[in-house]
Image (cartoon, rainbow, N blue to C red):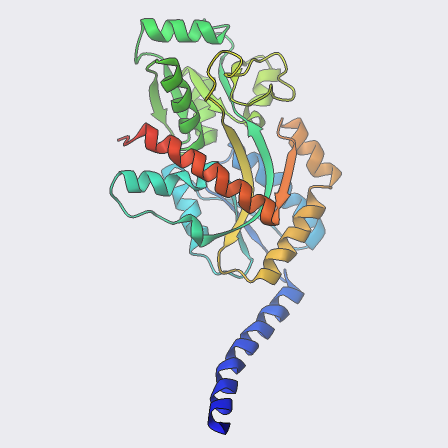
Length: 327
């Protein structure tokens, strides 16, 4: 009996020690810079959200929170980097809804996923924007119907850009083109920023985007929105009809941005991050920055965000399976 008690105590001791270490780490967190990774080049939706959030966290934590852009493979490179990072709370990811899409795309192509969603702990949702279809203001299409009619006359000749194969911008457009029965030529880039630059320069002719990156260009008269993927018209775009209004009942899509940590990050540190993010979203400077970008805060955390992430991921995975293999 005494021997079993001794062995039991020996087994429990390391667990208790690890728990104490985790609690000590949480009590002093953060004691140094916290890196926020964006898995895309500058200028896309994740970057637009990450920068004011990082600035607000710096004011709260009083440590640097640099935003590091690790673009490539539609976001898979940066996502995988954070999935494999030390689970200590010092490497965070500002992810888009494509987080769950990319592993499914790898499976469709018969290759091992660069990461899996169970390698991440969902921390908090920051924004959830209905996506907008935009064209250049000097384009010949003033309405969605005009674009569809032209595409039917010239299949495969009208181009659109995206942040890469199976990125949020690609999935949204694939939903639309499938429902409308049209063939547009997809031109993938390494992120939303380069995809937007391609549209502004006239290299491509259309783009699906969250409001953040495109709103300044719409206000300057460079871009024209034709339709919205939301269930309702987007704030600030009340004159832009939804696809649902136009008869495309299943064409609904949101580009959301949320904070994730490596899955093994201790619960106490995850809660410290959530507490700081709750403070951050109340920061007037952060709210002004995101509202000016056309991406108002839609904050969720804890079980509510986990449920949102699980349900949205399932819907997007079904959409990717419908798209099928894309070379």
